[in-house]
Length: 371
Image (cartoon, rainbow, N blue to C red):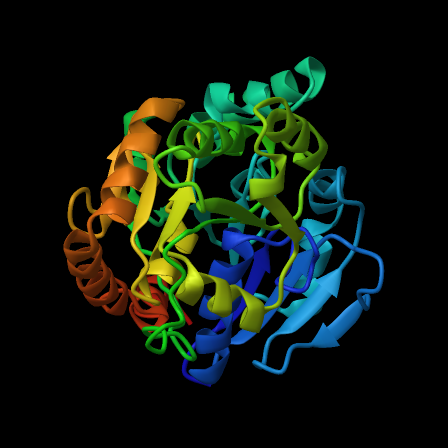
């Protein structure tokens, strides 16, 4: 074995129905570490239908324990035991919303992985008590991780974490698996299709996309929005679309398969992301991998994954008029659309999970105890 034994703690795994970009990141890196000789164990919370233990086909072990809302307490109570059982030499503390505080609990070196902090954005998503709980947890980040190497995935996230006083923040980047992606066949692109793909949550700001569609409906009478992804904000958003008289132009597809996702990216003329904050914006690069430009909020994370004017456009968060203007530019100018498509594909191809795994492995090897 050329590597070591790593215990990776994350709220979810890739098979969890609520899994997102953080789970993709963990899976892609763990799969490559396992291939390079690392003994990897991912510990995450249980979900209905998920085995308590299994070995992923990619070569790493998965342990599912604890509940979806209390997994952090499961970590607090069991981390040292998991380290002993797996004989792990290092822990990756992949925190999201609620910190695992592994540097205070672990008996072996810890490397943090924080994609982004929610900050005030959590108030758009959670009840006041839950939001305050998240804010309190995130307020502890500078104290818990100050002396711990912390990995992140974008320049804006690195700047935010460094600004909190964390001494070593490493931008390991983000990647995309472009196997099966690529430009659509001639005639496959739908000139009227707008796409959102991701979680359907309040902080994602999808009402802005619906309002933008309403603003362009007369100029582009066939334009429509398809929303792919699961989440609890769908009923409210359906009501917003109905109130604006465009309920028949907005489709909620729910969670889609990998093949369906790629098909949507290829058929869409524009992919949209109206989120208040992201760690990076994996879906931006996935869309670009099919030559689909992205129009997104100019917020941390998305400002790194979207190159304004080259692979799409950035607009102020919550500005439906600006979103509508950029959508209209792309839909109304085939020459511009073709240019953005070509540049998007080039940008996507520059982001690989191999690079992310290389950088992550460098951090882990540097942090491993001397043998």
